[in-house]
Amino acid sequence: MTGIEATDLDVLLGLLDLEQTGEDVFRGAHPPQTGTRTFGGQLVAQALVAAGRTTGDRPIHALNAHFIRGGNVHAPIEYRVARHRDGRDFANRMVTAYQGDEELFVMLAAYQKWGKGLEHAVTVPEVPYPEALPPIGDHLEGFEEHLPGFVNALKPIDMRYANDPAWILKGSGEKLNHNRVWMRTDGELPDDPLLHVAALGYSSDTTVLDSILTTHGLSWGLDRIFAATANHSIWFHRPPRFDQWHLYATESPVAAGSRGLATGRYFDLDGELVATVVQEGIIKHFPSRR
Image (cartoon, rainbow, N blue to C red; front, side, top):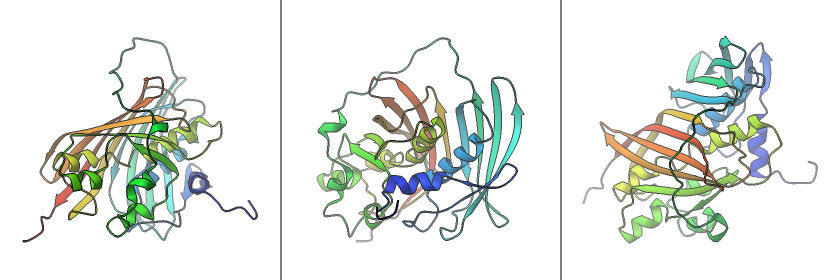
């Protein structure tokens, strides 16, 4: 793209364009915008691409991932895919992410061709449509000093909060036991189902832990919070088209033992439940001394 500045979505697509370095071995890069450790959504998305390149036309229906180390954001990541099963309609893969000899992340993924069967689902929450809601940048104005990691982060996902985010709620003193955020890629994606799955996987590690904090009236950046993803699971109920709007409806059923559990559901604009997420994070709050 000579003479044209790359968008954040271009950067994400570049991250998902893994280099194959051996049989079922792939290398992934980091974006220019990084934090102190590899973003969990990046690991999920790149692992999905690595595994998906080995499964043919069988789409993913479930993944379960564990985060072992934080990762060096200045070094590439090697994804090694193990083929546990290849059937006519089913496949199973294990992806392990390495930097040198150290394991960063491991993911089990299950694949099955779509079929017909019983169908039911919970209903989509009633919220304003995304076009009626401001972009996340509007919510960050005035919080640049407190939330530099959010302000300066890669933003390939267009996010529209249907409720006030944690840092706005903090100022009002309001508590909230759920969060509702519309999401889609900030631009059109190619017609490759794997990229749509990977983009959803990337986005699934954003906002999901918010409800743990807002349940207690706390906020990123305004309270002394340590948070890290411990494990992450996604079940895909329908193939996503993630350059179209999806409502990510999250809540936290429990926090205990310095860990918090959060659940999330992705609904498309037709109200269909597309995917379900469960994430456990290490959450520690250090109250300020008065």
